[in-house]
Image: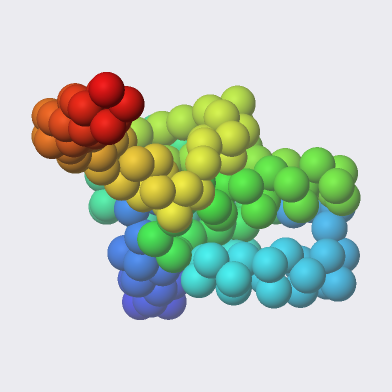
Length: 172
């Protein structure tokens, strides 16, 4: 491999190492303004948009053990990588691409598993990390709350019984 090509492959590999996911997008109809706007949106999730050469990505993907992407490596492609929230990034690109109708997600790779464009749209529908954490915390705290109510019921019942007895004695 020529040194120039090796340098480009290493550069793409350095981008791919930033996260455990990658989305491949066709940006053929997009303008510079569109791409700048998308990059600004992606920066909120600490994600990046990089234009790449198809042959360079093919070599880099093989080196990283990615699933076969050759059938999608035609035309003008870019990768979206980075950040810790693949669902949030999928939300951004799905919403942006639907709104602009100039770009499309071709395929994604999540934890070395290939996901088609429909899978990326499904990923975008998942709740955010914060929402999932809140749901989990709610599930974990629910048994503790119920235990407190059960433990509190015995003394509360006893107190109600004593109050009823005191009311009965006061009325007689």
